[in-house]
Length: 345
Image (cartoon, rainbow, N blue to C red; front, side):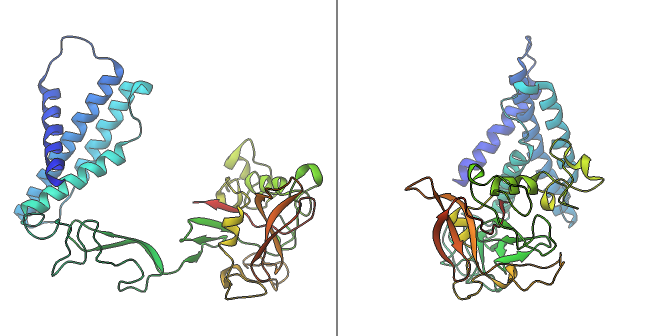
């Protein structure tokens, strides 16, 4: 496979050289002009990185690829500007740059004596290696040194563990929200300030069954719209049309985000902690004893929270999670229940 990568890079470089030397006597279409410009830019980027590697090796210095990166950005921008909407691909500089970088790094590794001709790179974990290509020797983030709780363990080109995707705690307090590394979901923090995020607010599930006014009453769709379309600083100022510009230097949407929604039953049940009770959630989510008027707290009612999942056998009920003990069941859609917003990171 690595031979094919090397052959591919050589081919790209050769094609780039052809583009540089050939002098067509006809005008190129915008899409082809854009594509050829990017091929030339990718080939020059690879050559630039090899030169930087060679210079650093000769002088005993750390590689400096900054000029290569600048030239790639400049050339890519010009190619996309010239091709406009006719470019076969757009905004792909980072992805192509990463591909070229991976290939040049691998070739440099081969030339150092490692790789398939040595030991690292043969997909077999041997003495002195943590891993090899996709072979992790049965390890994951939780089995290696570092006290990681989970995540994605990878292997570097030098056959050492890449722990950048591992995390020590599943749940992280981000200040206004709580992030779950296991699911990639960001959760609303309930507070006790009388506003839209107050832990005492309840809403019915369906607009047709329970028209009302937010934040203390109404339906879950009205409430989510309030989170997404009011200024984060006060939860009142409407920023639907103007976005951040309506917020006097602040941000539009709760925690600066405008894609909050009601969680599905599966998502909502994922934060239930069945080793706890009353409420059956992790301590990050708190309980119902939050101090009056607190805004830097985290609260949870030991009660029913709506999900967005309708009950399949009829149009009257919808699913909820009962956070006293974590059970799931259904309730009529016109009943008022608690709710917690979520967004996908």
